[in-house]
Image 1: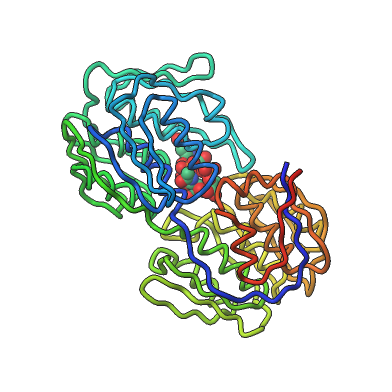
Image 2: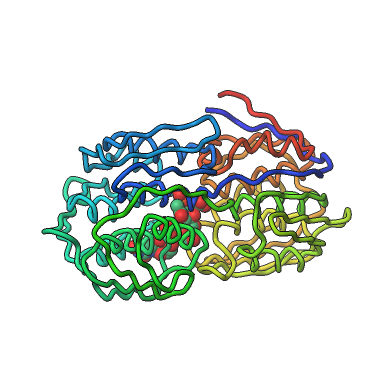
Length: 420
Ligand SMILES: CC(=O)N[C@H]1[C@@H](OP(=O)(O)OP(=O)(O)OC[C@H]2O[C@@H](n3ccc(=O)[nH]c3=O)[C@H](O)[C@@H]2O)O[C@H](CO)[C@@H](O)[C@@H]1O
Ligand SMILES: C=C(OP(=O)(O)O)C(=O)O
C-alpha cells in the first residue's frame, strides 16, 4: 500500500489548477446510462472513483472511449448486464447511483447493497422508498437490491424525509424517463445536483426548480446524446485553501468557482484569511499570520459542507484560540480527531462535537487515513507539523484527489509518495 511522507514546515505559496468535481462527475457518468446514443463528458478528474464508475459502466456493456485529456465518450446502447456487483460497489458507494437510471431505462436493476463505511452507516432507504412510490418493486436478496418496473416508472409526489444528495440524484435520474410528472420535495440543493440536472436537461430532460428544494420533473420518453463539461471541484478547492490557511501561506486556485463555496469562504475570512475572487479563480493570503480558530456546524447546502469539516478541523488544530466543530451529517466523521491528537493536537470529542484548542505546533507521526476527507486533514496536519509524518492507507485519498502530492509539491510542500 502506498504511503505519503511529509516533512512539515515548508512555506506554502503558488498557483494550482482545480480539477473537475468528483461528486458531480459520478452521477453524470451514471446518468449517461439514460441516453439513446453516445454522450461526451469533459473535465473528468483523474481519480480512482472515476475509473471505478467507468469500469462499472463497461461491465454493464457500455461502450466507453477515453481520450488522453480524460474526456470520455459513453455509448449505453450496448448495455446487456443490469447488475452492479459487490466487488465494485464495496470500493465506491456512489455505485448506488446506477440504480435509478437502469430502472428508468431498462425496467430492471440489480445493485449490490452498499454497506456502511468509515464515516457512518449511510442507508439508502430514501432512494428505495422514492423508487417504490414511482411503481418499482424492490426486494433485497443475497445482499442485492433487486428492482423491477412493469413498464415505465410512473411520476409521483415524493417527500424525502431527510435531505439526501444521492437520494435526490437517484430519484431525479429515475424521474426524467418516467411517465408523467414527479415532484421531489425536500430535495438536496448541492451544486453537484445542479450540474447533474443541467446534464439531464442537455439530453432533453424537462426539469423545473433546479437549485431549489422542490424539483418538478416532466418525464420524457427518450433522452438524446449530448456533450457536457463537469463543474470544478469545490471540495478540492476548499482543501487547498485550508492547507494554505493552516500553513500561513498564500495560494491562487484557478479553473474554480467562488459562488458555490460561500459558507466555506466566510469561515476562511473569519480565520483571518485575505481573499480575492475572480470569475474563475480564488486567492487566499494569510500574510504569514496564524489562523484564528473558527466554529461551525455541518449541514446540507448552502450551509457548511460535511466534506470540508475534517480539513477545517486540521486548520483549527494549529489556530489561535478555540473552535467548536459540530458534525450533523455523518455519525463517525470526526474519526480523524484521534490521529490529529496523536500528532499533538488538543481536541476534545463530545458526541458529534469536537472542541479544538489550537496548539502552536503539531508533531509529525505515523498516522492512518480512515476515509477520504480525513486523509486530507492528516496531510494538512503533516504539512504544518514539526518533523516527519507518514500517512498510511492513502488509497482513500486517491478516491477523491487528483495527484495530491504533485499539486502540493507545486505549492512548495515537501511531500512524496512511496510505494508500500
Ligand atoms: C458521491 C457523493 O456525492 N457523495 C456525497 C454525498 O453522499 P451521499 O449521497 O451518500 O450522502 P447523503 O446526502 O445521501 O446523506 C446525508 C444523510 O442522509 C442519510 N440518508 C441518506 C440516504 C438515505 O436513503 N437515508 C438516509 O438516512 C445519511 O446517512 C446521511 O446522514 O453527499 C454527502 C453529504 O453532502 C457528501 O458527504 C458525499 O461526499
Ligand atoms: C464522502 C465522500 O464521498 P463518497 O460519498 O463517495 O464516499 C466525499 O467525497 O467526501
